Image (tube, protein in one colour):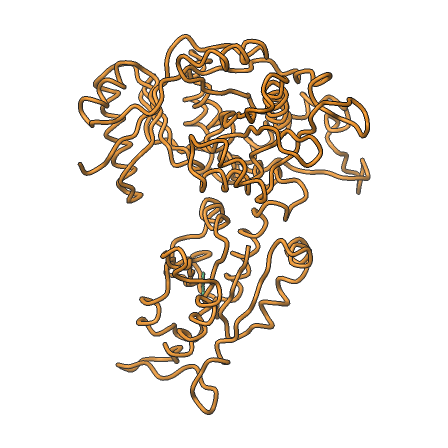
Length: 487
Ligand code: ADE
């Protein structure tokens, strides 16, 4: 990912970002930061970039021309207009949308990001109107310029880019994820200054350690961030309700467990969640009136996001019918949920190559890279290329390989289900599907989550595979639907 920072203080920005984790990612070429000196673009013979504000008032205003020309030098270079889209250009200002982990995740999907740092009393409004796509503030206080906010944003976004942190899961499962703050951490020595490390952390009992950490997170969130704690409590109450029909609601309980869920509404057994990762809505209902009220609430939420079309997972036949009748929603897929309910990993022996030289003839399974995109897209067309590209970049897709030859693939969908399982035609019948799914199931278990997939009605081959792996099927159907707003 490339950050282009338009600034009057390029050295400040480059120094600030050249150390530690981001510095190492720059050295390894995973990220790049270029600080573009706005002063280099002024046409003024004294290299001036600011002037007095029209209408009077204190301070100086950064002029439009040097800012625009600096921006254009970058936009032209990175191919603005290649795809017809505007380059994402963030102006750091206390008047912007409050920066959050959610926005960091959204921005981390971009290939290039231009950050504009203001100074003095601001920037001529006309150039902002011309180039800025996002106004972002890092907090309700005023700094002397946009350089520190640009560095904050670069750090928070950069660390989410795959490969920047050694362990990608640690970027995904930490503070704020699922509305809980992180638990306290300790390192050696076991006693310092008369203070001992909590005994449970020395016990070696991983289950007890997990429980203790969760307890600490809950307690800490309650004490330090009552706003987040209330959200956590509301989602916990939903979990209690959803678990009454565990298999049928695993998609929804996993959204909560994985920290992706935003609660749209909850009224007893009628619950609607928004998945912050995929943008899809998940809806379960006990009765038509309450179900319709929840449907109206989610349409309002989607309206606020300015989307025209929404993806919706409905968990009751009667609601699928209502959505069809009242909203002209279209059924994309009728399926059943299959869930791995155990917590012991599946055996891999005889399925997956695990060591060098051993297990002749078995596939090695490893993450896919961007170089595999075309091959995957050729064999799997149920989702578009952009989606596959996204999932590969986020390290959510794996391939079965014989040496360098790709034999088949599987992955995790944005909302969390295992999917995109495809064995290429000439390699079928070699238990590669089982090998791939086993690998993904075990990976999800390692993260402490519940593996599940959604099997389209009538897909007997996949049903047999799920049963052979020990997954249990929900008795009820789930409907993926597409609903158009503002018909
Ligand atoms: N520029 C000055 N103060 C700022 C803030 N709080 N956030 C973003 N940009 C700024």
